[in-house]
Length: 355
Image (cartoon, rainbow, N blue to C red; front, side, top):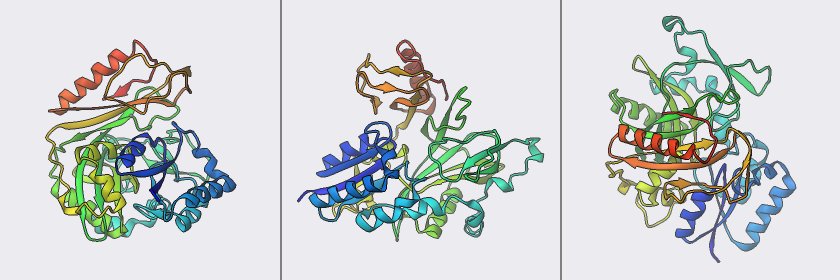
């Protein structure tokens, strides 16, 4: 009987391909490719889906990315019937409210936005964030009079993230990333538009040590990504993503699919043998549609990923596809992205990206 993995994410295409290489049968649930993630709110659908998988496979796995943050009602159902690879699903809910996590942050020498001194920088902006969100969706400068949102101080400067993979005994730092935002997307001004690997100008060993302690404090497992800002050498945590994110593809490809093996606890891969030996700078961007349209593929390019099918309807504000590139320097990578963006404007109408 073949091994099976239920996949849940915004787009499962990449994981489907990489799991097939490892001889896993995949059962995908996503938002932008199979377009069935909304069905998880229907408990009958979810039960039937799980029972269908279990009728064909013993001990199926679950690997998840974004998309389960606001679906707490099915966590127990998934956990009781699937072997979760990575963090326990309840971690998605547990790590949302920073006010409850202060002792661990303090112990790790990490701060949250509430401790940022806005008066020092003459900044009085606030943002409203949903308790259960992913990808920067539904974060706004506008007052959200909803119990689903909370108020947070706005912090200036670039947003970074740290990518790492860990288990009960080990922590492997993979890299730092600089995050990209869209221009003039007023509905979702903080939407995640991509990222690139980056060498921080600050002393990094103490930052890595802080996040290592944080991972241990929360008993994190598998692949994780944490967004943060650095202001006056203080590290402010913005979001903790205890799951596979878009950055996973960069590092997994560099590691020849071994990160995915670690996520699965495959027997033939040893944790301490994972190294990031590629000297290139890798990155990706997501193109978001400025208007609704029917997709047509005009160009063939190996750097394109998650493309819709020809004739598929893409709604305004949805991602069209992603571009993954690498270069020897950060500036060369930025130039390559700008060149791609300029060329693609001849074919598609999408929001510009702050690179």
